[in-house]
Structures are given as structure tokens and as C-alpha cells.
Image 1 (cartoon, rainbow, N blue to C red):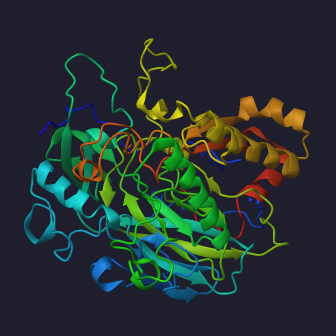
Image 2: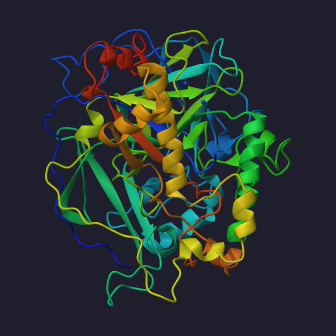
Image 3: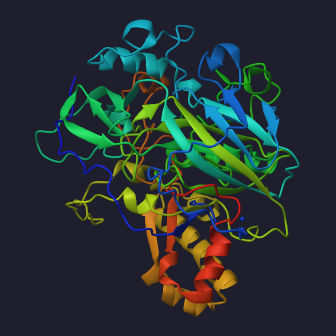
Length: 517
């Protein structure tokens, strides 16, 4: 088993000045928010931003297997999935999640390689990957869905992330077919195949992660839900299935958009379920958000989504304890967690309803996640003549499909343009700028950031289902998880006076946020 070498520790948390930002999301296929009260400033006695207020409701999928009990959890997306509970608007809800694989649990293939379902001190990568691939259809386990009383399609929901706490030991895995870099060899000594699995232990005193595999590494604790979203409408499901059909045509088989095996709830999405051929996997995100894996979704951030079904149906899972700006080997620090969130309904006509969605509002978290000391490297789209990166093998002889399709799965440019369009709309509608003026402001106030474009996955060109189950594929793309996403982040602090006040009222969802970090 190859294990990555130790790297220099990142700087631990640092004091930093506030930088308010609003992020607009764009996906590679061609909805809005103003709120009415200022978020309370961070408490001088609570500098870490840890939420110590009341919790109105708790919903837990942590204690028991989701696959076996189907208690307070699901792992597919469909509007027919029933709500697990309903809460009033403005409620603080504690979502207690399992890890993305529903482990440890002997009711599936078997628990991880350690005792009582935990990991061995130095995990057996071969054994754990066998178990993970055997239960691949279980991914991702989501806690919920929680309905918000009075929510109807077309309403919007502000989801404020108040606090995230680990509930168990965490892990990161890496394997040749699961990475963005498959087929790219840094030097002549790079292995053709690699496989690694490490555990992480959380230190609540230093708010950091350490691992027996990396004695010289300390990773700051910067948690966020990798998957958080609302239930999609039937129209959204149909559109996503159309997207997946395009991806299958471009990439080839297998088609993993729909898989009734290990599906929860089984009565809706399982082999004999009412909608077995429609329930979406949780692997690919969309306008309902879902599996986006963006590190900006941290404590203190508020997400605004459009409700697509009655009750909205909020769920979260696949929680990460830390991640860089791109889940480059398809996992981060994966953990079961307690995620406390405030859910506030925004009706048409309410302040905050008009901003494009999905959108996020935050303060210092985006700056806090930046390194205090860094070295960076530039990459350009150069290649050797006669070679074709694995991400583009599908493009040969498929130009007509690209022209007629509603998605170009690998296009960071298209996703970036869609995100920037939402940012320009925000500048025009709230700031009163013309399109030309917004285009002048964009290059000096907007950061385009990768949301999920460097995630990678599994491709399937020329490989059998058995080989994929064994993790022996060699390409970089996973059908059902290809959709690159980009964020257009507007720095609100460059605006002054009345203009700043207007932008903050539109983006900060005043009166709905409890605290900011």
C-alpha cells in the first residue's frame, strides 16, 4: 500500500479582519435573496463562533444503520420521499449524521477494519476499499428530510450553519481511479497504481486534526457539510435524468444516475419501490444543491435555496472536518457529525427573495480558510502532441451531442460563466448598475473559485462493471458525479455608504442570521 509522504503543517487558525462576501453558484447547464436585518456581530466572549444557544429540534441518523432501519435518513433524491419531521420557520435543528457509507455497521458488507466497527490504528487500505466498493450504492447517507411548516414550491429557505461537531473518528481515502490526477504522472517514478487510507483524530482543545500516518501534520478544523440540500421537484428529476443520459452518451457505461440497490427509502427508491427508475443518486448536485463539497459551506455561512416541494425537505450529510479548495481525490476528512442549522422560510415579497439561487452569505470564514503562508503553482492547458487527457476521451465523434445537450459536464468555463451571470444580475438588480458597469466591476470585485471541478471520480471507458467495483478503472470521471461547479464571489467590502447598505441588506439576510464567524 502506498501512503503519501508527510507534508508541512498548515498554519492554525488566525485572527483576521472581516471580509463579507456573497457567492453565486454556476453549474455547466444553461433562480433570488434580499433580507431585512443585520446579522449580529460575533460575540466578544465567543470568538470561535461556536453556537451555544438553544436547539429546538434534533433529528438523528447516527446511532443506527440507515440501510437497516431507514430512521431519519435517505440516500436518494425524489419528491416522493416522505418528510421525517416538520418544524416551524426559524427553528434551530441539530442534524446528527453518519459517515457517507453508513459505516460502521455489520449489517452491510462488514464494518471497517478495526474493532467494533472502527478503524485500525494504521488502516488496511485493501480491506477497507473492498468494503467501501462493496457498499458503493449506499453513498451518501443523508439525515432528514426536515420539512419547514408553510413552505411551498417557489418559496426560498435560508439555512444558517451554526455549529458542527465530530461524533466519531474520521478518515480520508485515495485510490488511482478516484482522483482528478489519474493518468497524470508528476515524474517517471510515480506509481501506476496507488491506494491509501488514513484516519484522523480531532483535538477539541486546538481545534485541529492529527493522524498516526502523518506525525508532522496538523490540519486546522474547518468543517462543512459536503452534502446539504432540499428535495427536488419532478421536473428537476426529469432534467437531471436528461443530463445523466447525455453523460452516458458522452462517457459510455455504466450509468449510475439511478441504482435501486441499497436505496433508502426502499418503498420509494428500492428495487421494488414506486419510483425505482427515477430516484436520483446523491452523487451529483444541482439547483437543489445536494453534493457540492464546497469548503465555504462552513460554520457561520448561510445558504439560500429555492424550495421545489411542499415543506422544502432539508437534509445534510457527507460532513467533512477539513478540505482544500477542491476535493481532488474524491474524499476529504470524512466524518459523522452533529450539524446545527437554523431554517428560515422566505416568501415571495419578503426582503431577500430576489437574489439568484443557490447562493451563500458569509463573513470571515472565506478569508480564514486561506493559508497564512503559502507557495502556489500555475497550470496551463498544455499537453503533448498525440495525447488526450482522460477527461476528454469522450469528445471524439460526439460533437453533435455537445451541441444539442443541456450540459457540458467538464466545462469549468461554462460553469464559471453561469456563476458570473448570477453575480452580474445581483450587481444590476440590487446596485442599479448597467450591464456594462457590472462588467467593469466584476474583474475588480469578483473572485471565480472552483466549487467541485477538481473533484474527479471514476470513468468507465472500456472497463467492466466488475473492474469498476474492484476500483481498477483508470479514467478520471464518474458518471453521476461529473458536474463541475464554480462560484462567483463578490467582495462586499469594496462598496461604501448607501450602496454597501443595499448590498448587505440583499445578501446578509438580515434578521435571519444568528451569528457569524
